[in-house]
Length: 594
Image (cartoon, rainbow, N blue to C red; front, side, top):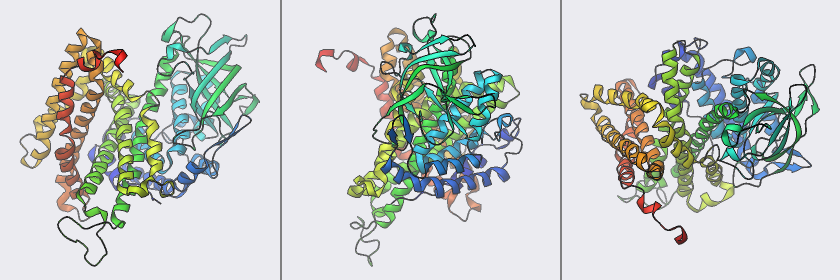
């Protein structure tokens, strides 16, 4: 069976060395988030993930959630683990101290989420949905609702969900049929059926707070007629405790390919009592706040599973003896050499490594921008940070989920036939990772969002937040001979991205299908350039510190950066060629011929 050890040294490198930690400690409320505090927090979180969450991962997958008469039971051990997680304050780590949170930076929470997802991604979904619901309520709800619900959600006594999807609508939320009718007391009666609701029913908390999209009687057609409502499983009584049962009930749970310990529910509302969040017909604005958080969280799921899969593959490749090295026996005293000596095994392991370490840097970078966006006292700084978050969110959701899935598949390949066997553990990573490319907006939708909205927004302002710093970094480091193996490949790939951006913008004006046809390749190209930018910076830091390193950490970082530049980044050439070829071959293909 695989094991998991949190990659604390690399996490500390990204948080404290790759990025300037004083940019975070300068923010209001983050003054104490120095390495002296951050490092022990990460160490304690690692112990919890390794010792409490990871041992439940395989058994939770085997047992799954159980449904009986409207009630859902999570696998053995989950309720106790959730209680420990909540009592330790981990759910409220990034939340407002006003509601019992610790007010720690979101960038730190990114690493906490990664550890939870690496150890037990099904468990992590319950926590992630609660944090997303917390953010939507905190941003848009009335003070009365916030004071009633947020303290218990932050403490983990209550949890949260978001209820969007219906049988006739997934991506196209304008087709929602769930209705909301005003009650005399200011609440609303909500009726309808929602499907694919993660954590919609479970036995982990005393109450579940659902955020439900529905239509008011006077709602305009389509997406502009949707409102958001807070619908608790149990209505709070006068003391603020869970009281009368609200008629929102789970009617079934799905039998799924993966994340089997995460309850995916069909929820039926029969005039359930709910309260409007935000303005009437403006629900999508509030829901997108939650969805964007969820999309970042889904990307982190890919990162976390990728890290676990990488660790399992390395461990197996060290121990499993098969064949001899092509250059001759490396371990002649043994019956065979370990898998680690074979070039194709090393190719897969290094590919897994560059993806996990590179995407970790990307996730923390976006987490830092969210901290600046939410906490900075400088309006221009907040706007610039938000621009970058808006631009990079589709990349984080789509690319991190995709390479996490690819990494899990490579782990199965390293294990060979043993990887295909349930009892050996890695096939679970492959199954668990697959959903991340689908939910919270399928990856194709993320690509369309990138080319259709983010590229054109504010006359290209979002793009400039990325393009200008990359160009400035390349220009300031071009003369550094030691950095040439990193600067030159980055510059070449960045040039391709600029040309592809111009091509999509020009062709898309004439025919939107041209932009759509190139969107998936463009997102991957953008993500590769982003990782190249981060890997070049990581290499620079490591080169400056390697002479005083007796652990080999910085030397390994430099070697990994070389592999990325030489063996992964060249994929940008093929993506560029595909983008520039246009969409005619797919759009002119006859419908009847499919």
